Length: 362
Image (cartoon, rainbow, N blue to C red):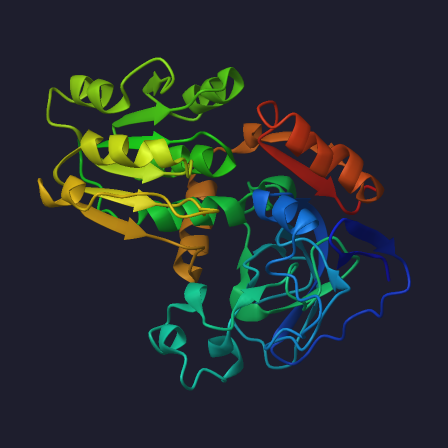
């Protein structure tokens, strides 16, 4: 079968002689439809982190070349003999690409999986990065517990957005939103825009967004931001307090990963407020603990998602509480992933939010 595979940094190839995977008893065989490209894919393209190059991944036993694509939707073509829960051929699904030792019965000694925190499994990884196939292929087999049926009113292209929205849903879940709460989102890239939508869907009434790029400001406004602050021209904390009558926001979610934002986001949250870190940081940054001490403010860090986050997003899509279609700024062919996907996101990052690979339309 055909599959886009990662051979080495800077070396992506559409291979046409890849063996078609066999559906195991606990799996669903899926024909992928759309696959999103994210910042992790761009990072992996230049410097492998999740992709096993020389040493096989501890769970999949695979190393490069491995299939690409972890944000994907598709249609079920085969149901494993031991799969229950009413799955049938033809069902549209969004896929949670989690690889964890808990799902394979190998979690002895893994404190994370012992706590069902499969998103931080000590030997974890992702389908589409760490082996186990990938979304940019003719077929992929997935453990049935990591597939989520899409409602009839949710198309397959939107289904490919469930994964990044689940990251945001998990982040927003760290703070119990109450009626009238105010939130600050730092950075309006794809994850920041997803966070804005999840905040709105879960009841936040005031959503302040700190962003520099004009295009991203417009996207933020479209998806529910009530106020936009330009951190190069305005005092973020000062504006947040002005907007909230002097008390500050209830929660701040950092999707930017910029050192200068840390002090301002802590200053922006109210007494006993919460800062949630969503960003991945490339290097150490200075932090003064007293920023949190004076005000008894909390700091939480999140990574990825759990199954309940995928389920929450899918339900919100079906209910119309999430309407992310405009996040899709381009659809491209499999054989143009680098030229029209990776390069476009690197060179025109303020123009694009989510570029989807149209697997079946190529």
